[in-house]
Image (cartoon, rainbow over all chains, first blue to last red; front, side, top):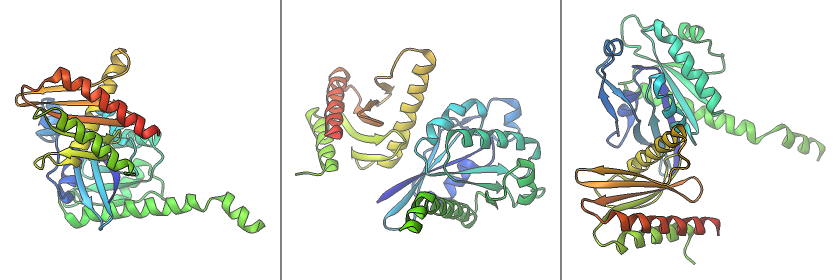
Length: 191
Length: 125
């Protein structure tokens, strides 16, 4: 059995813990504590301070280990700890709170600086009234066109699986790209 | 000749059995939280254990760096009905040990360091 580490990240209250709970086969490790900060409490009552952890088996030989990060920037040291050795990551963004897109931009920038591995963005809460379309969110986040952004509902198994398989495809494609590096091509053309 | 993973499992097994009933489980984990080998009782999910221990070691490393008190040797959680001990071993690996309540913590810390050395030796061989 080969284990692949995937990180689920994003700003506060984007649905990261739920995303992992929806697909995990094991009881999810969570480190939820009650929210004490008044502004943060308006959004939800419990928050992750350490990590969320779940597993998802792909087939007989491969399994994903899903590591969810805390969302608040004051826990950014956990982002580094959890990102170590990951093969790819998923950035969740709350589609209903454009005022918080800047926090997502911070997450995107920090992860890009930490690790060069592939990532995808999932626009969550698409089932709620007032959810903005992924195309609009892409523009607001300044996301390049080659980075997928998917509509998602974190409680929906099919939607969450879809986001994860998009990331896995991307990891595969980029791995193939780098294995057929220009050096190898040159050697072939000369030979 | 036993494979490296079999040898690691033997080393962990020795650590557990040498200490009577004091150790409820031991695991070797990569620093990014992936389980390498474990001797855990059935009621503990070893994968979850790996993720938690690596996070604890990561936070510990972060704390000692911030406080400028050198390299982290180990972190111990003293809980109502047991202990968890995590320590960095070899290169980018973590040894996690779950102890029962009233275990001989001093003795096990010494044994854990020896286990760490044995694993480092095996990995560099």
